[in-house]
Image (cartoon, rainbow, N blue to C red; front, side, top):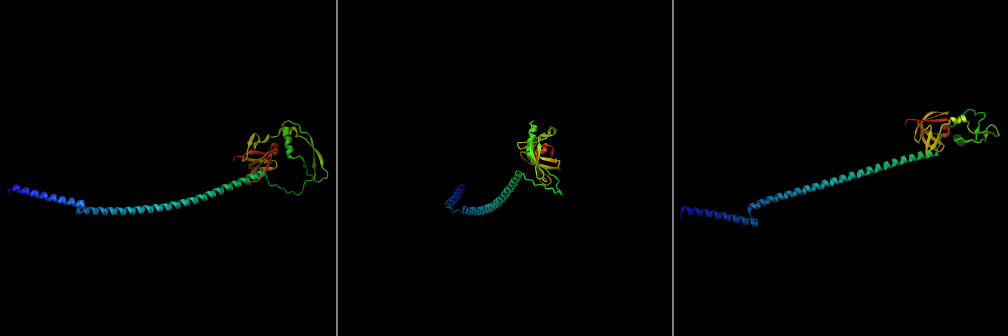
Length: 257
């Protein structure tokens, strides 16, 4: 046998050995007994289990964090609810108090009550006259005069306190000289027309009269024949008839607010 044939046989043997080894490994892979397959499979299994463990830990952490966040949010929501409930109650109480004050103020304005000022005198005058012609009748006479009507003479009784019998005196219309000095004064739609200006409720004014010193005030109410002003200094309300304004006994001037 030559060397070439021997080499061929050796090569054939090596081939057959390798082929047999590969077939054996293939069989081991098919039945799951290949050593290298088993080793790597165990490593993959270990990695899988570790990843599962970490995922479970992460899941539990997220659940715990979500529960803590839920509890915190619930507490914050309850606290905000209580605070807003208290604020709502306080705001409603404040509104009710303001409305109550406004109602009380309107009631006092509608009642038009003013404390009477009693002047103490040492001795009464010897003869004080109480005229039975009231301001309403005087105002009607003045309106009639301004419209050019003749006011009939009316006899009225004058009571003198120190005499038993009443005295009859005659009252007639205001002389023409007084008519020329009248200031146009009227009330329309809850507003006062005086000295060619409109005055409304809440108007800041200065008030001055023959029997009162000048003072700052605000118009508190406007009736049909009278207005009420509230002093800035002490809140006292003063009653002013439009006849007093028209005759110049009391004057109003606008005041900067």
